[in-house]
Image (tube, rainbow, N blue to C red; front, top):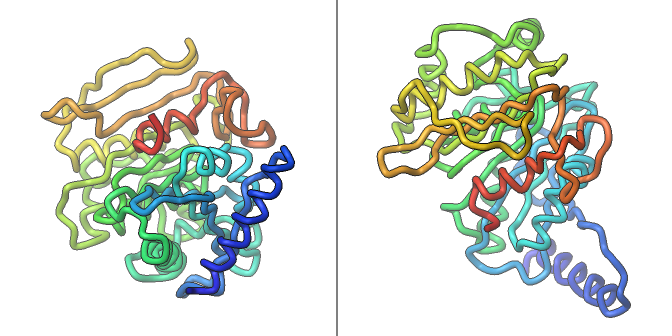
Length: 316
C-alpha cells in the first residue's frame, strides 16, 4: 500500500473517533507534495473524504495571490463540500520561493505550457490521485480565484482532454500575458483583442482538436484588481471553440444582482455560462450556506461554490 494511502486510513480512523464523540472535524488537507512528480516546485494537498468511492470525481482548486490551500478550501467551502458530497479535492499551493506574493505564475509560458513547470506539477497531482484512488478520469474539473482563475484558464487550454469542465473566478483568458509587465497590463485593461485570437491561443496550446471543456465564468462589476472586461475574452475564447452563437440565453440569477447568461449546444446542454455580479469586488461570491466570509470571500447572497459544483455535476 502506498504510504499516503496509509495516511488516509489513519485520518479516517481519527475522524470516526471524533464522530463517535459528536465532535465536528474540519476538512483535513493531506500533504502529498513529496509523493508526486514536481517540476514546478509547488506544494500539493488533497482532501480525500472517508469512504471515497471508486469512480468518484476530482476537483482541482487553485488559490489566489497571498492565499494558500487551506484558506481557499475553507473560504470557498469546497473542502467541506468535498467531504459531504464524496469527491476528491486537489489543492496545489504556490511557494514564496516561486512567487513572493504566492501567485501562481499564470503569465509565464515556462510555468503554464503543456508538460512544463507549475502546470506539469498540478497535472502530476491529478494523475496520482486518479491512479491511487481509482477516481473517474472522465470527471476531472478545475476552478480557481484571481491568479488561480487565470491558471485555471491556462490548464483548460493546455490540457483540454483532461478536464470535463472548469470555472474561472475573477480571472483572465488563456494567453492573456507572457510576462510580468503583460500580466499587469492585462489585469488593468482586461486585455481586449479580437475574439478569434482568443480561440487561437487555446488551439495553439495543445494538439487537442476537441471536444472542449465546459466553462463557467464569474466576475464582479466592481472588481478593482482584474478588469471585468477580462470576462469578455474568456467568453469569446470558449464560445468560438464550442461553435456557439454570439447571443446567449438570459436565465434568472440567485439575486437581482446576479446576471446569468448561458450558451447551449445543439443537444440543449449548457456548455458555457457567464455569471456577472453587480457591485461585487474582487473575490468569491458566498451565499451563507457554503464557505467562510473573509478577504476575497464575499457574502452577497450567491452561493457560487454550490452553483459551480452543480455545473460540474459533482452535486445534485
